[in-house]
Length: 193
Ligand SMILES: [Zn+2]
Image (cartoon, rainbow, N blue to C red; front, side):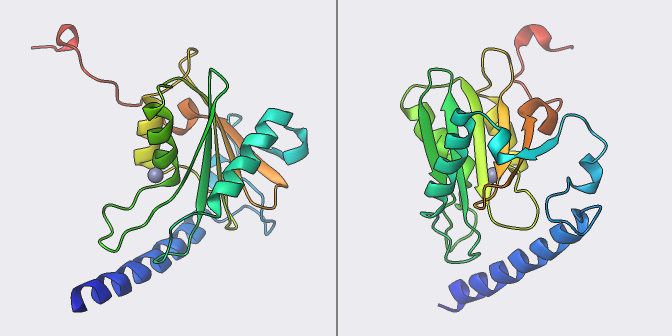
């Protein structure tokens, strides 16, 4: 009991601390909520666009991510994230974040959706939408970026759309911009002795 309470208190503290740190690090250039993070503001590969300017299928993908977000299991952080994956075959799979009292088994919305997609036999992703509600856009964590990179589409990349439940602005980019120099598995031929 003491152990789990301690974990819960510690986790809550860490979540608040990290959220605070993140807010500071990702402080927008202006006071408006939908500016790009400072470090991305000069990059052409990250764009903030109006939700309505996106294609109907992308809007639908973002709405789907928003819907599954409501099912997030988040008793510790209360931070809900929804993800929707569109495969090259046109199939859509969803995931939400699922927390755990022992912390490390917690799984992100993206990897929940990836697992469902791959289990059904689809391994080429065309687009991924992630929706969460905070001032800044919520991007996949490093682990999820690497996991997504395993399932890039035929063009070697995938579109990423980061939205909010309000569906007003969306950050548009590609996985290759979020994870340059992704790890790829080694081959015997590639090893230098
Ligand atoms: Zn993640």
